[in-house]
Amino acid sequence: MYNIIVCFKQILDIDQMKVDESTQEPILKNLPYRLEDLSKNAIEEAVRIKEKYGGKVIGITYGGDQATLAMKEALAMGVDEGIILKGYKENNPEITSDVLAKKISGMQYDIIIMGNQSADSYTGLVPGKVARKLSIPLVGNAIKLEMADRRVRITRTGEEKNLVLESNLPALVTVEQEINEPRLPPLIQIMAAGRKPMKIEEIQVNVKSTKKVIWNRAPKSERKRIVFEDVDKGVAEISKVLKGEVK
Amino acid sequence: MKAMVFSEKADLSSQMLTLFRNTFEMDLYTTSNENLLNFGAKNVFKLTGNNLYVDNISEKLAEMYKNNGYDIIIIGSSAMGREISSLLSEILHLEAITEVMKIEPKDGIIATERFFYGGKTVIREESEAKIFTVLPGLVDPQPVNSSSTENNISIDKDSAIKVVDQIEKPKSSVNLEKADIIVSAGRGIGKKEGLAVIQQLADVLHGEVGGSRPVCLDYHWLSEERQVGLSGKRVKPKVYVACGISGQVQHIAGMRGSRMVIAINKDKNAPIFNECDYGIVGDLYAVIPKLIEAMKK
Ligand SMILES: Cc1cc2nc3c(=O)[nH]c(=O)nc-3n(C[C@H](O)[C@H](O)[C@H](O)COP(=O)(O)OP(=O)(O)OC[C@H]3O[C@@H](n4cnc5c(N)ncnc54)[C@H](O)[C@@H]3O)c2cc1C
Ligand SMILES: Nc1ncnc2c1ncn2[C@@H]1O[C@H](COP(=O)(O)O)[C@@H](O)[C@H]1O
Image (cartoon, rainbow over all chains, first blue to last red; front, side):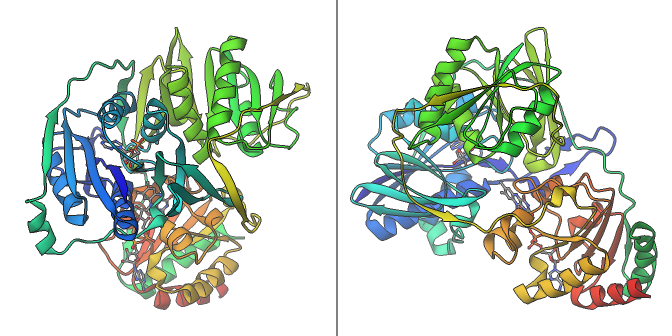
């Protein structure tokens, strides 16, 4: 039996994000939210640990007004209880790690699961900072995870070799996308998720960050965008261009 | 300004030393055994120990940072590098910014640029952050004539984490970052055997084969070192041919530097057609053989 905590993040749907042609800035208005990709893998892995070894999964998200949506999806995937920490404004690992660690430090847990890098901001700082604040080992980049004798064993990818690592519990494990295929909960579970316990807590932030955004815009794409729907014509044109490039 | 530079990898170490040698006075800390004495660091510190992992390395680096009066810490961006930066940021109570492409110091403030929104945008920030991880592949390492002083530091403290096994991976066989022509396969090839036709096209074009993340990581049809994208290689060939690749932001982030992009995809609404110079809407198994034939003429 394990007490499992999974931390997940809600992000703007970056795949649907369009760019303003005149300013090159992303258009954020009316963009839907979704669960962050690696967070989904983290939820899936937390639920699998529970299913295989027994225990309970508590899901935590530090989010904005739409966070309930993300929490419902997590509950539908198999998380047992949800805690929404409300007051998230922008991506800032200093603040996020502080908020999460303060909450978790008052809880019972054997293992904490997070994604190794979030799909939108791509910082990868939150897990290590939370682990250090809680004084527990950071066991990173798992593509495989097993529990045995109150220990966790993971396979970690590396460029030259994969490492099999073991740590005592409690520990914080981060997962990579390869570790699993997150489930799509059936409708009945999504409906049932509404009856699972969900707590909402307002958070006051008192951490300072010196970071200021100067600009955030898409690199200009100067591509020609000549697209052929007639295959033979396309092949003729493109092979001509290619012959000029390949000598 | 005095910078502490760390990477466990030789190539990233020499790249960072090349990139910042005119901006900072630098000491390199590394666990690599390769010779890195000719890239402009004042000192090269080799970290040795039986059980080195991110926790005990971070603690040693924090100690060296405090003792040697460094102004900033620059770390090579790898899984290990990012983990070390997050731990260091807590141990030393310093703000960190990861995966940067640029570091410009000015009056105690540092401007950085990094990808955002999954690679769709680049964000420029100013901060008093002191820890940075730097993306690989930003420069070709250039040696200098002078030599660094070599030092050894042994780390005696054990890591809380035990390495119980190591699984060697096949040695790197390609250098996609240097390739002039790359033909990349996406999930659209549908099966591993589909790589044959991709390879044939690469052969006719005298190029290398690359792939999207699913092809390299999820299905292992290609080795990981051939993955192009935000979490893979950032390539800048003369010609990049994307076959059966949808063109998600994380993939585009890796091939945006290509001079010419050609896309083959059966879905005419695939985002890759917004990021290409020339595109053909069609089944790659029908299009590529025709293209090969036309190239041979
Ligand atoms: C943190 C993070 C990091 C990531 N890093 C990377 C990265 O470095 N590199 C990367 O590539 N991805 C990365 N991804 C994944 C990325 O979001 C996409 O999932 C991935 O790029 C999709 O790969 P694909 O285009 O091959 O597959 P899909 O999106 O499934 O696209 C397949 C395409 O093939 C087309 N197709 C199908 N059959 C045929 C046919 N017979 N002929 C022609 N066309 C056909 C389809 O129309 C479709 O457009 C990352 C994701 C995250 C969250
Ligand atoms: N606001 C948040 N709430 C809960 N978990 C988060 C939050 N932000 C990041 N995380 C977790 O930290 C992981 C890495 O995120 P990051 O450090 O932002 O790249 C994510 O995959 C989540 O598991």
